[in-house]
Amino acid sequence: MSSTRGSQPQPHRREVLKGAAAVGLATVLHPLALAEARPTPARRDLIRTENEKAGTTDWLLKTTRVDPKTKYRCPWIEGYCSHTSLRAGDTLAIMVSTNPPSSFVIDLYRLGYYGGKGARHLQQIGPLKGTVQPDPDVGDERLRECHWEPATKLVIPKDWPSGVYLGKLSAEKDGVQSYVIFIVRDDRACDFLFQCSDTTWSAYNRWPDQWSLYDDGKKQWYWGPGVRVSWDRPYGKYCQVVDAPLSQGSGEFLLWEFPLAFWMEKEGYDVSYVSNVDTHADARGLLRAKGWLSVGHDEYWSLEMYKNVKAAIAAGVNVAFFSADTCIGLIPFLSSTAQVANRVISRVGNFGPRMEEWARNGAPEVLKLKEGPDQAGLIGARDVYPYSGGGDWTCRREKHWIFAGTGMKNGDGIPGLVGWEWHGEPARIAGLEVVAQGPARLGKKEGTYAATIYPGPKENFVFNAATIWWSDGLSAPPGYLHPSAHGASPKGPDPRVRKITANLLNRFREAGD
Image 1: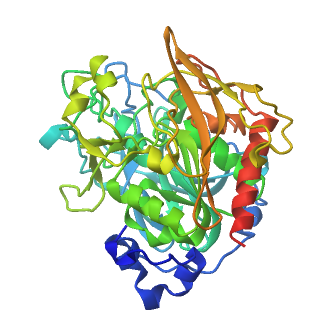
Image 2: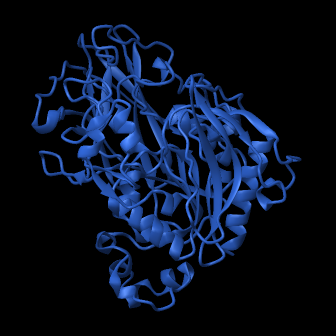
């Protein structure tokens, strides 16, 4: 936080929003906020009304292929978008390649509940002429950055609400399909901000074959500096834990995040969506929500993201980490070679104490990284060796309000909910409570996870679920595959997970009124 705060009492976030123009909030929180839009009025029934519209399951891919030579790409039809997130009125370019050349159509959908169908169809573009677009050269630090010609450009309509949007690409020649994905954000005051973990999607993207943040040209699971990845390329088939080719082109959203969004929209929660890039670049925008949510596998953070979320907590925003392995990889956001901001990331460090034990167990390159702030000081717990594994999510504080109405007693566990990565070693934060704790195992290796909650300074709270698989306990949207690996397998929707989540979200919402 800026030193301009000094030791003076911090205003409540609602006071900050009202007085932003007068007090220069951007300089209080972060200079990047200077160029950002001001909050617009709340629309509490927006998501509920949106989900009353007709849904469809036609958004699901029916036919897709993966080139066995690359293991990850679908050259028959593949594409990417010019933005990770954008507002209504902004122009989205969609780049597509078809090999062999084929005409194709793009069907656009907004993901949500929609009567259990999972999406609403918005429009079809095409048929468009498809061509073979060139594979990118290898740039500095193994950067693969496409410079494809746009297949189409779209001005985001004013009536498209914030959400996660899929473009289903369908080649007419062979009927092969894949996705592109983008986020429509807004600036309205809302109850909840759902942050998509798109830096992690990009970090694990191996397109076209072995070119992720984990590939240094020598080692398949490298964890060090000196590698860059770009959003200017398609998302290949997801490369870890679950084999889900029918999610081709959608990053990790359908795997770890959509079940929470599906459930929240079913319940009518007032939710708006942002990307990691928004958390990085729009500090003031975080203050428009009563609760900010990190979801799924949210591994890669910039120092600005860390500071901005810490500042939001200090201003009274509630935070829930329905995620794990969160805020461990320290990244900068870099410009593309075309000088478009925030299109490239590179691992330069890790948050928290250096991971000597990890280095001793096969990743010595981790010691070449810089050390950032301790992730536990934000989340309530941290990554600890062996990091991977799984187990039951076991109640340790039955009288805590998050367990109200669940019937859970100390020692009761929700089978398989912890995995495949988790947080442990609770932080020394005043008022922090460990609400669930137990063993997380991977083969003969064992650690201890810790789910925590601690109070913020404005009657707000910070919750840490300590598992990537929390969303699995909430819903199973159409096409969803339950993961089964790394020492545990979640069992799907569980009324106790739903009740704990509702208790948290309802408390967050009430605290802001």
